Image 1 (cartoon, rainbow, N blue to C red):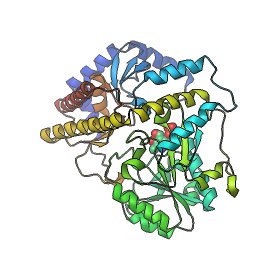
Image 2 (cartoon, rainbow, N blue to C red):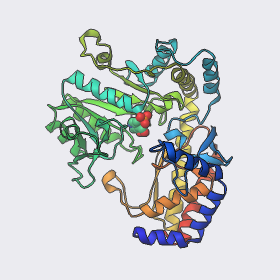
Image 3 (spheres, protein in one colour):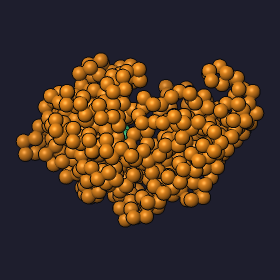
Image 4 (cartoon, rainbow, N blue to C red):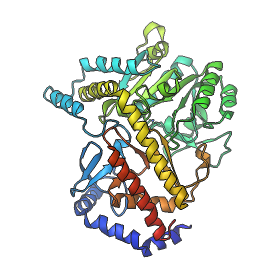
Length: 457
Ligand SMILES: Cc1ncc(COP(=O)(O)O)c(C=O)c1O
């Protein structure tokens, strides 16, 4: 369907118009916030569901969000993934309250940093040592810097369809018009010098053995390969053979392997995808779940590489650090969250996997039965709805066929009180009950039926 035709159907669609009326009527305060924000902000930092206007969140608890108008939604945003335990887990709240009474920023080390470092080191299969920063973006930036310093080689390879954050190196993504088995990089947005794309990065094909030959060809200039063991855009847990082949190719060619576990760490399993697949890379990057929603990032890995951060034992020193790195609030939240995830791991992770699999199975069975061309991909509790029924191996298989339906779908879902953020990667948490998942399934089903009723699907 062309954009114009889709817009016309939305304009004339009974369900499309009804959900807009409903959302507008129940969110006057959000509308007021929206008009105020327009004066000062060049861009609001987080994209939510945009139509008819964004909703603004007042509070969050467990598996829910409440907006400034008092409407409560089942939240599948989960802060873009950090809230594995749900919002405001009691142990984290209590620890933060205690820390607030003691101050929250010193610029001088606190005891919590070492304790959290120990927890991450014990949880992360590849970690002999850990270094903290504030975001996943910083973590991947530092991991790349350490890999370059350690190997003395300039280039980092990432995969088509991947996301590693917002720094210049991470924003070399695949040009979708390049050949699948020999992808070409392109910068996302302006402001990134071409030299970053041309001389410091390269893009490899995901879940495709052609990547191994490219690693061999470029071995003299490749410092490391960074990979999301389950991509945000393509969540799945059947990549074990590929990841093992990748590790072999890296080892054979003296190229370091870094798992970007910013999303998958402490979510797919307590030990992340490393534990799930039984693969131990040289480095791993973390963020999100460690601190249950406070800003955090971490690099973990083999002692000799991690020594780059201290310059110890003759390792080539790299700079790391920043005003807020290791701050006591993030560290305190991290200790409480990590202990909770560690101590409940035998029930938490099987539950997340079971509910994520159930959600995907029920939505997919409904789509198949009703003839909706869509599939809910999932890696345990990490899910992504794709509006196509053709098989997906990698990002080259994504089609644009359902994109008009997709935009409209999330608006209807919001009308059924389930919120999924702008990037459409969604999560369950340990705080989502079985009945919440039932309501999510129902919301998905009803939203599909609404689209069909208006001739959009
Ligand atoms: C796999 C992956 N790596 C890195 C990042 C960057 O993390 P942050 O947003 O904390 O900078 C993200 C963020 O979503 C991510 O999904």
